[in-house]
Image (cartoon, rainbow, N blue to C red; front, side):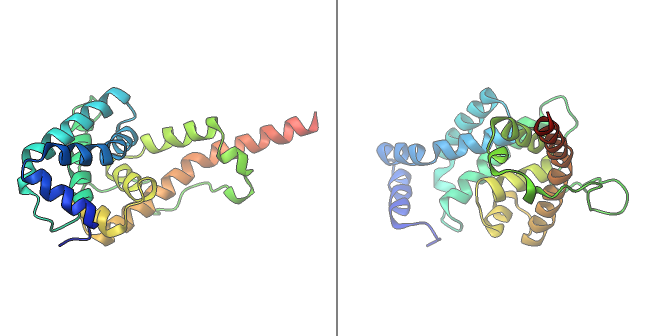
Length: 205
């Protein structure tokens, strides 16, 4: 048996036997998580709704294929992530493979400009403007990095769970996560720096 808790294991087994109530409970349990994952990856509510429906339709059709080698949530996240990435690749922007190399400027992976976020007021980090800026920065990440960042840092999956979902190695997850964090830090540095200058200017008036 995998690392599923007993109640989830019982629900999955009941659903595999054709218990529609058990399947409905699984949907109820995971629906918000799947939607949030798709929303973070796609940044489009309608596309996220489409992925949500596609995911649970696929789960329903292939439930007998789940043998408990990994947790049910990992299996579910893999289906939802693949559906999201397929939708991303169907858009007009050029697709990026999960195994494609990450193009950074020069040979150094370090960002050009780093602002000390420790001096940023806590309330600024929680502001609506800052959250929107963060969402935009995450959306601008190449999909090969965005998927790792969303699964690991936003959804809270472990390194190994993230690796299992994406079908890559744990060291690869760590490498991509490091690059994603560096790119986000660089992207947001100018914003936080500009915000700090505005606040200083307001204080002087």
